[in-house]
Amino acid sequence: MEKTTEIEAAVFRRLLKHLDDNKDVQNIDLMILANFCRNCLAKWYVSAAEERGESIDYEAARERVYGMPYSQWKANHQAEATPEQLAAFEARSKKA
Image (cartoon, rainbow, N blue to C red; front, side, top):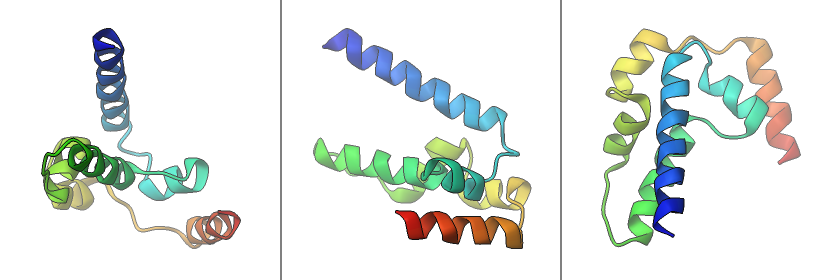
């Protein structure tokens, strides 16, 4: 079981690095295509910690996922959603 946990942790770190290396991929694009985004990962991080009796603040979890404070990431990397993205997100949301 320990090796499995190590592998899963390595995969998670690689996912975070991949997202960090591809900051141009917007959260709304991730939501449209995969039905999750960086904020979802942060929420899952908080939830997993709570399931194990740990308390992790959501903002601290977002900083872990984004690699910086969310406000900084948002100011530097988040573009305004286009009307097309918003329509695609709404269509995706109706499917779920």
